[in-house]
Image (cartoon, rainbow, N blue to C red; front, top):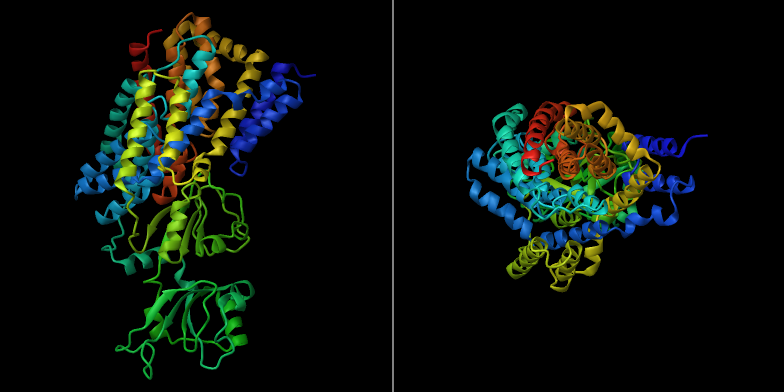
Length: 616
């Protein structure tokens, strides 16, 4: 029979392996491990669910609400507008301002949300300046992770680090414990990325002169869509005249979707003559077809020929059809966020067209060429979509920030400007929350919960339901379910076993080398599994190792916290890395070439600086 400690390690190994499989949701994996710990008798009910009562969990959930208030009032977008305003045509100014802005915002809000806001802004600026977006998007992701380490609330590992010290009877970390080292690391990282990193990412830019038609065609070519776009015309007296697209069911019967309709404006004149003024618009399922309507359709040639044979609808001449490429309609390139609820669902299961009234023209899986999707295609982590429809519908998709990021589009969107008073109120609430945490007027968790409540009461968040939807429950469940794993390891002697192993191997070289060992272990694991889960498991190891060496655990814990956040070597290491991978057209090797050197450089800085500011 397995000893209890061996059983915990077995569950931990299986859990880690499942974390590495993209098909498995990390929160469900963590929940399954929690249940395994209880069902094997390793934890009691109270021990198994103690994580959900932890004050850090409440604080993280409330911080999501505070961040939503900042986003909804347009405060974050205003910061992005400042970037556009002060950039001019200087690549240096744009790069440095962009990296400092994302770092500062990430110090107080979710780095994933910050990148989601600034990613389209940076892509737009790159197009204006004729720079390939890949040159700047990886630095954007990296600096968001660096910025998260500037404050106690910048990232979940920092909050859990402070609580872990308190749980073991030590003094917790204050709001700006990380700021000095974090600031130095930020400057070092930005310097490296400017002089070396961006040069390794430089690629030829495909100029478009900011012309909407050319941008649209560029997207159609990139996603290999043009060959599926055809033009057909509804003859007078045809049976389909007066019937809606919903009634006709062409999409389900022939796999042909009507994207746009072109109607003539003058009678007794050829529809596409030079002197006529055709009216062109995107249509939905309730549009009723009219006689001599020209339809721009999307579908396979075989399905289209079958439709025309059965209905009597005919192709439009090639000379006219060439003028009807998708140019005035709306196209958008959409990225699935790492926590998107669409992941692991088929396109049919997402009800994408019913929900947004948009058509998915192409699907691009990670590391694969774009292709025309079928309704049974399953969406995966890192996928990008090319969608078509009216901008107001694309805006609905854009506002659903938890699931998607609208990256590029044919026409510049009209973003409603929020009332400046609400932006000021949200900013004031954020500042007061930070001040309350700095002066320790109330416990940190109370300060954050009050701020979240004020965001709702002042209507910085329009509806209370939005506050609940803003909380990333996957993160909450993941952390709450991994905390008991640390409890089980400690209870069965697993933490002590790991700690003694570290001390036996590295202890003779001094605490600095032991700290470097902890940093390296954390760094390796955080490249492939959640940095929060990695930190939760290694904080107890860091504290017990420090106790065995007879030194302060604070630098050991902070080393783990920094290492967990500085994950740059793989696209799956952090959500921002995953988000920029598709937008920047990166390969896995790109992250290795740029990420590994910056990670090593930052590791050296942190290991040298920590003992100077937090003595052993």
